Length: 336
Image (tube, rainbow, N blue to C red; front, side, top):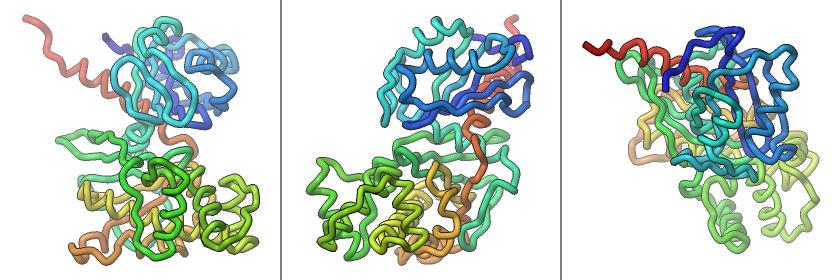
């Protein structure tokens, strides 16, 4: 189906739907950044259509969108989609019809984040340790939030092409004795223990509770953000140990992804947790575990690891997808 250029009277709708929050914006002209950004709670809505309708109702004098690209937390296959860490379950085609859109596309949220990276200014990246981003080399994008997102990005001719996947459900890197003890506790509590089990918001709380079991201590009832706060301030030694372990294991995991993708263009860190612990992350074992003691000595020594601190970057990535549709249509030769 043809995608029309956005106009003030028929803008594009872009969205980033995570396990906790739904972020929306509107694009009224080609190559423009999303405007009228709003952040809603997924739990307040039964599904995508209701959330979009409420968002459009909140925007003053909003024209009806002609097309939409929605970045979602989970694999996109076929017409039916269910959020990995939330209750939304819907048909893409039915949602398009109900919303009166000419075009509705779903992409993985970390695919959208990856596509945003080349468009973002250098001011929204915070370097974690040494390393450089080699131009036009593959990149990896990783981020712990409600889940653990992973995507790659590869330069093909003049276009950046995303490499979607479900890397967050790869194996949990366990390299120290303390991590082995925590992994044992987690395996007693969960049928499947993967990277996301520990390297996510809920995962940080699991690490804290597992360490309490290891230390034979009753855990305080702390949410992930409370573990972050107590760990950063040193108010709770077990919370600090959990946060330190989280950063170290995340570094090892990021190194594994970088080796897999050959990500000499850098490993970019996103998600909702890390921007709140920038200083702690920089002083942790993240970078040393990223480089690691690996058979391919030196391969990761000069690969950059940087944290994205932009507010809603995946909305920009969703915009890129729709812009690419316009370009592809222009490149299609006229029939003879």
